[in-house]
Length: 418
Image (cartoon, rainbow, N blue to C red; front, top):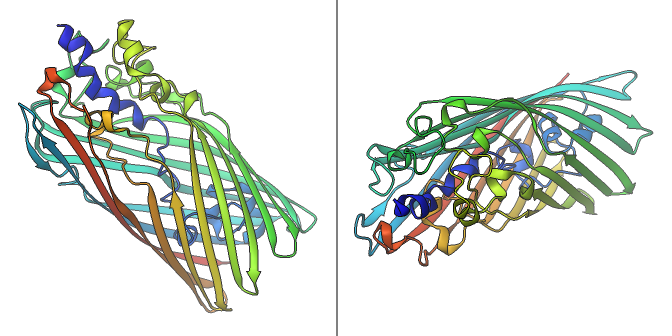
């Protein structure tokens, strides 16, 4: 039984990852913004960029935007020198293609000094679905699906012509499904073994806010700032997964800080650099470490249950935009962050192959008359591999598991002024 209490839980540290935005949380908002890698904190683009910085609402005018993004995930997990499993497995065998819609509207009022708006967008969508069971985890097909949408009414006020303050009230909705972890649904691992795996879709929610500021500092120079405080106003838990998610499936989201500076390099050519900092240490399921929890006999689902031991993360984004003429603009960008997965924890992250660290993006916008515009973007997440090192415990057969990932994304949006 010591094997069950100490070793098997190592593989389950993956579960807490999904109960807060991951490092890719801004990769799915606004095709217009994603053409420049999401570097838009200081550059209002359309109604959807309000999701990055609510102050953008003061500058984008009266408009609505409707978008759709296609996500194509590629990857493989390679098991070697293990007594129970060997070979190459595709974590996206039945889930390689995902589609993400979004919508936003913005309206000026009070002689154009204030605006109101509403947007609904995807904060995170992740799906892993094996074709076969994984004997290290359970008897049914291994899989996990997590969907996180946000609906946000917005308000902004313009100070003079150069400064704006914006606020959104963010209603977070989450959907979760976990399959194929029967090996761990027992009294030795979980406070609620009957609420651990294979329970179908479950839902949770929370309410938060984001505040933003944009200033024109000088000709061709903009500064953008936004802040999202920790989200701990919970309106629902994942009750069907209280046995597997730390703190009895209590959903919390970390604080986020975003700063961006845009400079017009030459006439019509804009460059922006954004930095975003995410405080994962505020979220128990993400920050709490594995071994102390089990040395103190805290199981999964407990208030002091195991977590991933994540540190705070910093994301860097750089974007370029060239206004070719009054009807056409071109964009390009680069995104970098460090993966939170270390080589000794590859088994623990087989349901969370978040191995990518660098993305390159491109896109453009074409105006169609005075009121309509069509935007597009493409993105490629460079292939990255994390090689396991002492990653599979001897009690599970030993050996290693290597994680490899790659991603393609394409999206389009239709914007209309009114």
